[in-house]
Image 1: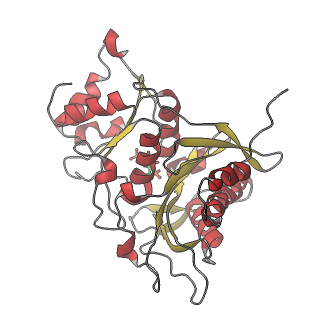
Image 2 (image 1 turned 90 degrees about the vertical axis):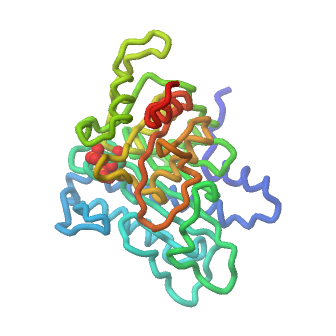
Image 3 (image 1 turned 135 degrees about the vertical axis):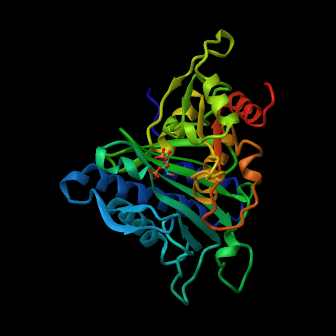
Length: 335
Ligand code: FDP
């Protein structure tokens, strides 16, 4: 007999049973993120037909042009969590500060940080997109968290994951007990467990980096990327280059098949491009939970002490052997 599919809701109920006293707040939060994914995926499928492609004409807190879909995705996340109940703080990569929640509502104990639409440059060309989320726990009673209360190291996350809008829609997340992937079955509107306990290969043969920035990099970065193209039987080089312009899609590829994604710092911009709290931390934890590594080039991402909500950080993430080699090259050491 064919196995009956395990839905996300049943999976969450099973996981919850391992925590006596759990009241289902966390399970509801993950289910609500799944719902956001369904709503956004539905818009994306028809985007070119319902006039939601292109830019709004505005710029976000990072000074980047805002796409209509950035705004739609951001609003969808906020509406889904605005009534409190599941969260006591909401912070988005698209907004200056945490979202002020309405007064006098019952708030949950979780703080949710999210990048509502990752890979915005892909919106108008029907390429993959994603969303990334990080969940922290708020222990204090009597007051709601302020911006600075969200400045926690990645190692303090209680859940992290992403939605991938590719040829299918997926929800992939971890709570520190491995990484599980669910694929949306659109005909029944359910996420079904499709990738249980994902393990990343210890080494891959693919690298993802925007090589258009080559001339802006420090010598260590150039040396490392150059080394990936040299013929070497023992490591399977030359590696193949695969860069989609969507961090989530590139990380998903290497989570399943191995390899490395790099968004290095530049000589004139050593902090790089990606956001620590909304992108690097959640993906670092997912990848570590699958047996991989994530580094700034000099230290573990999850140990970086955040100083600001929108702090940027260089990112090298993927198979453990590949990230270790990148670290060594960046630090001028030999592997
Ligand atoms: P985007 O700005 O288009 O949203 O952090 C966002 C991100 O895309 C990643 O998804 C992607 O890997 C990277 O930035 C692309 O940046 P470049 O265009 O500089 O390569």
